[in-house]
Image (tube, rainbow, N blue to C red):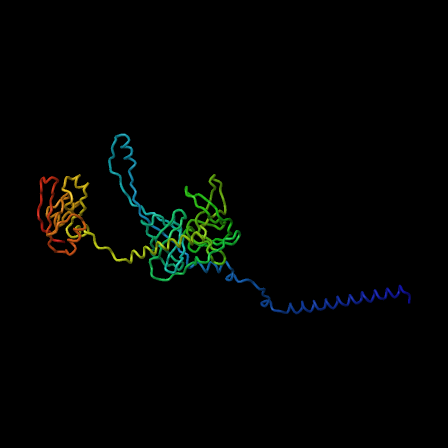
Length: 405
């Protein structure tokens, strides 16, 4: 056999070996496919992630019980006038009727969140502004409504502190572990958008340390997000996907100062500012609690004289004595007499002076307090009342026995 014939024979054996190998692989594939087709369709399930285990879902479930809806109500008085009266005033120089006063109820709606199991809540100051005149109602995530009272607020940071009036423990958001606020991190706005409770919007932290001006008030170092912030979200928490506080939803910019429409520009008060403000607010709350628990001061003499006899009293200073022409250093001035009171029935008038109570001379409101300390309802007290003028002129004194009411 020649060398060429031998080479061709070797090549033929290699090709035959490769073909046999491919046929074996093909047979194995056909066997595997046949086995696969014999498996019931119900068993062909591919692994899927459970939505309940998503980080965002877990974060919302963690903080939602501490988020509240805040509804405030304030009654204001307004003076209104009939437009026809303006016509009469313009042409005839007088009003036919006096202006009319009406009462109007103003309501505002916002969000907040509990930061302490005792029921302390942080929210925006503009949600509960003028809270001294407000009725504040707080609705928790479980649908229960509570009365709350205003503790303190700060217009510069637009933060306020209120407390639920209830003796129970509440779920809360811990301010000891706040978000690092990293650019691009996922953030979630939780609140009551346009009154719809438990509303969620999601976005990213777009920027930090933004300064904006709203209604001529400048707010500094805010965090910016493209998550939707709508009316009613104000005061609600902005959190990261670990449930840590990023900030408090505060404002949405719909237009630039030049009137250009914008999209995705929402702002929140950063968590570190919230934490510092809450620490300050808690100190104010502690002082208020101490003042409530301290014993009430003794009833002042003016209040006792008013309560028992219907007289309001005032110290006679040198300037006041000189202005009235009364003798200096003696007596206590009667500034008002209640109608149908024991003092009124005895003929006592405003401008007279109390010089003695029983056998004690008085020259200050404090001395009147001491003299009336033991007097109660039904007690008979003798007063020496009248006017002693300067230079000894026109002394008009009378001793009157008044029965305390």
